[in-house]
Amino acid sequence: MAPVNVATSAGQYPIHIEPGRLQRIAQSVPGNATRLVIISNPVVDGLYGAVLRQALAPLGKPVMTIIVPDGESFKSLDTLNTIYDRMLAEKLDRRAVILALGGGVIGDMAGFAAATYMRGIRYMQIPTTLLAQVDSSVGGKTAVNHPLGKNMIGAFYQPVSVDIDIDVLRTLPAREVSAGLAEVIKYGLILDAAFFEWCERNVAQLVALDADALAYAIGRCCELKAQVVSEDEKETGLRAILNLGHTFGHAIEAGLGFGTWLHGEAVACGLVQAAVLSGKVLDLPAEDIERVRQLVRAIGCPDVAPDLGQDSWLDLMQGDKKTEGGEIRYVLLPGIGQAVVQAAPLDKVQETLEETVGN
Ligand code: NAD
Ligand code: MG
Image 1 (cartoon, helix red, strand yellow):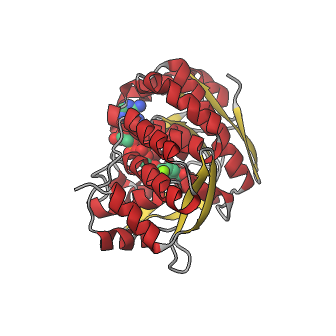
Image 2: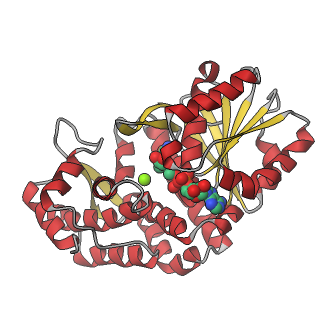
Image 3: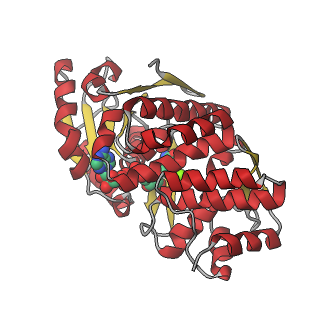
């Protein structure tokens, strides 16, 4: 498959999507890199670190590996500091290149390390979760969490390449696959009705990790995200449509405690809630709402929202970053494949919660 190109103000970079891409990673390494720094966690390094180092060996460049603990709670300034400590102790210069090997946690943190080490060095994204392959590795948002908020310390900083090996998804827990598929169907809903239909027809193959189906779906998602990001690199407008389902989803994640539901699971349920609200505000037809619900079920994600109490639902949605002057702005669907961002009347939101929250 031809690479997907992402155009940004700083130039363009390729996304390579292939089975076995890890073995050919040397093709993406910038020729003038002095040293290579793999940043990963024990789980992913244990599975794929050796393959990566072997694939880099023919380049004859020194390779060091920095392992940070696994998990969202380690996407922190403290962990970042341990990365800087190692890089400075090893006297890495500005022509060193970071290779982020892992899911979104590693990609976001390694990307931010690259953005800030000596005012910025180059980095390559090697995403190993489905969510990271279709979402977090593309677009140049890098960050760590702060005790007062997720992703609050970060930078827009684009990688030199994204290398997606779909074979690595075979070791991903099924729940993580389902969560990643939530973001996949989101792209169809906001931008591409034909792709949504394709997902409906191919959902069994996707869940079963069929290589052709995955390569097609990941490629299409990267193309769609690349288009949106190229038009709105720093999220001042269009990029907000990527948050379909995320206002409801954020309330679920925060209300149940982060990590109780995976992000993608909460987003999947939020897609159903956003579709129901779209029915009330923009007349999205009932059969389209049902298609969203059926596809969310088919990817193995929850379609009934947890009870957080009606008041706390509204408070929690208010706490989401996407509010403007206290008014909640929702991504809504006038039809499948089209998205708008707007406020919604409170009574319609309340009706939506009554209809979508279970007991
Ligand atoms: P994650 O990085 O925590 O990975 C999930 C789990 O899967 C981890 O335990 C990881 O070790 C394991 N894992 C990774 N690859 C594996 C593989 N191939 N086989 C087996 N296990 C594997 O979670 P995630 O869902 O990839 O990413 C979530 C993060 O992404 C959040 O911090 C979120 O804020 C961020 N994010 C960023 C953007 C962005 O635009 N930058 C977009 C969406 C999400
Ligand atoms: Mg998301």
